[in-house]
Image 1 (cartoon, one colour):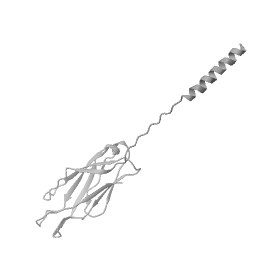
Image 2 (cartoon, one colour):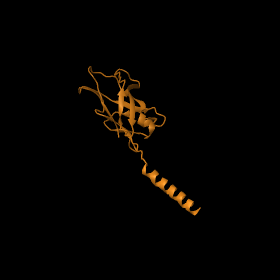
Image 3 (cartoon, one colour):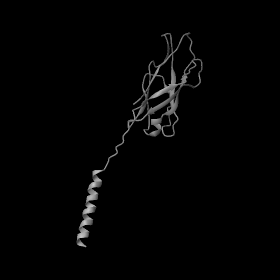
Image 4 (cartoon, helix red, strand yellow):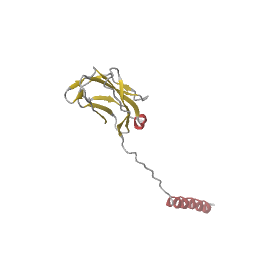
Amino acid sequence: MRYTGILAIAAIAAAAVSGSAFAATVTTSGNVPQVCGVTVSNQAFDINKLSQQRIADLVVQCNYGLHPTLKVTPSNGNLKNDGIDAIAYTYGVDLAGPINAYQTNQIPSSTSTTNVPLVPGPELALGVPGDMTMVVSRLPWAAGTYSESFTLTVN
């Protein structure tokens, strides 16, 4: 019986050693590229309208960073017409996500940057819809093209 017990222990030890010789490792990995930016669409503007109007639709997206921010920077500070006339305006940004819902007050025209705070996570990674609005302070008096450019960045 003692001999049988020793053989049983030897058989179990041999099985354990031979089992580890056939072990395998499975390693998985994947890469998600960094995306952080704004998509602008449906741009429209009527210089002859004094009420608030939507000037663009936005989709803000970012999948990295702990404190992402949408930065909006006007270039002229006014709607300019080749130096002949300049019209002040106000603008606003409205994001419609359930987590990243944010609406600025109408911001007076200037060249200062407006920072819109964003909340990182799945919603922002997939894209938060919104829009940009504008109200002109008065109607133009000089013929020509009036323009303003806004730089929108997420970082």
